[in-house]
Length: 136
Image (cartoon, rainbow, N blue to C red; front, top):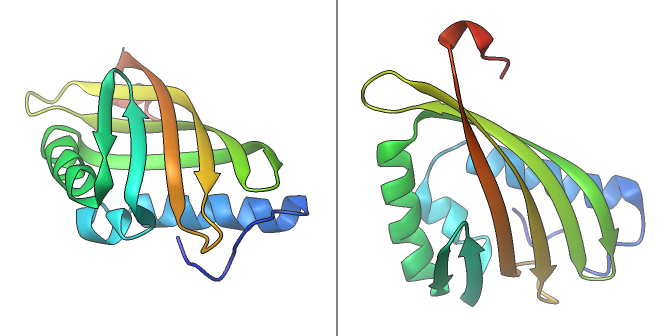
């Protein structure tokens, strides 16, 4: 995510570009680069895990991408207002045993005036799939 797109988000095109930037960034699977898109004191809820600050986010992402192999993400803007967005997403990955999953979810985002994300609430459900069922 770049700080060049900052709130308030006034039009669908700008909001959608911000979401696409987040998708592109997450698909790098680079924990440090991804964490840099969040404020130093960012707060997250990811499933049932509560995280605070870039350091915890970086550690979380390292663990995530050690377990979720060949991760590929697609995000879609659901709605936006001022400094907040709602996003739906799905991603596919496999574990170390070769079992593929598609993970579906919704995120609520809140941005600081700088354009960095200061809060992220994510609800996610995993579905085991066969490799033939992959679509991303």
